[in-house]
Length: 118
Image 1 (cartoon, one colour):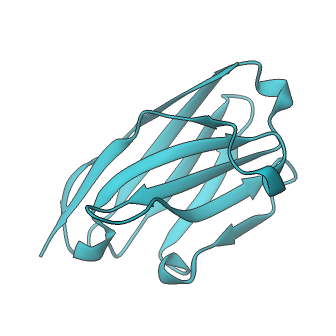
Image 2 (cartoon, one colour; image 1 turned 90 degrees about the vertical axis):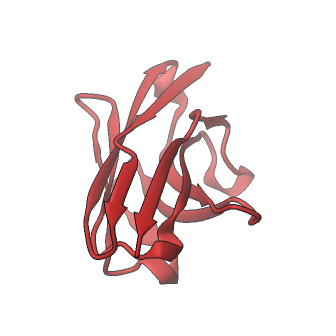
């Protein structure tokens, strides 16, 4: 089992920045990739960014150039730096861990709320 705990959410004005953190513990040797998802009110959960154990990252078009995913394996942490935030970035942000990316996430964090005011 892998446990994921997100932190760093909050209220920010449009144009501002936040950095989310995800701390992983447990059987992390089984994890090959980490991702960040967002669920806005009334919407499905959507993948924003993913990073593999080799450091390759990919982003949803709507966040490219604004969000950066990174990982610090020594600390078992994954981060999402969010810049130039927009009101439509509002939602609950979830960290996810994959053993096989093609199979989808195996583990989820509890989520952290991000609210961007206009």
